[in-house]
Image (tube, rainbow, N blue to C red; front, side, top):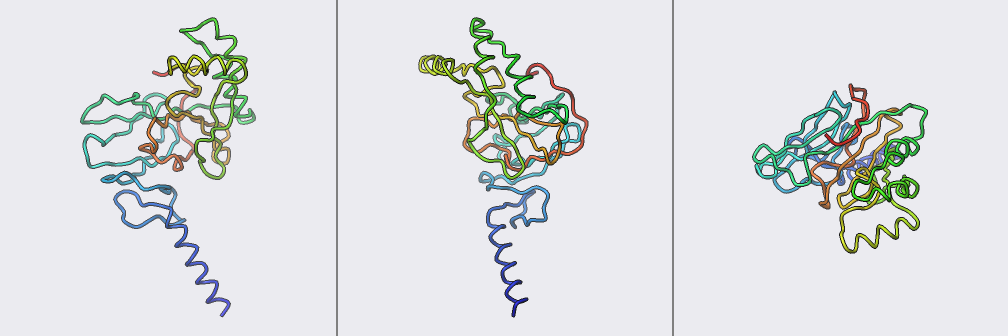
Length: 236
């Protein structure tokens, strides 16, 4: 009787898990826990989740494979960037960038790494007078728009104090510059992602976009040992 109850309980747990996971590569059945990459939400109509692995960057990701040419994108590596391009029309709203890979010393705290590389080096071309203030007031803070899952750290750069109030006033007139540089919070959803259980020396900058759901599954990104480049100073 005890064994029968345990078997039924295990089946129920597997069903509950599979209800929230989605197949890839055209599969009609949902994932099971044994799959390496799990779709955490359904793809867009006419699309399926497709696995991608980029050895140059040491990144795995699920990206939507769509039948409609206007919604179909191909992924490629350019330097330390993972880019997406649409074969039918290479003009991509918001640019082709999807994520950028960086490295850091294994014993350096991820917040300290981001501060050193992206806050202390802020240059505001349009408002050079505020560059010093931005470097003092912008902080590395948790990214809270959505959660990435157990063991994954998501961070962003945002303004604080009087500088934040000034930026907020400016945004009422011209909603463009959020005051913390190109890697800081902006109109487009962006964030840094770090998986210390997979790699203590790798982290990424993710451009999620302005849509509610991106073409990639934000919960699917995995790090593995690959050939990735040192941090570049700008988008190229």
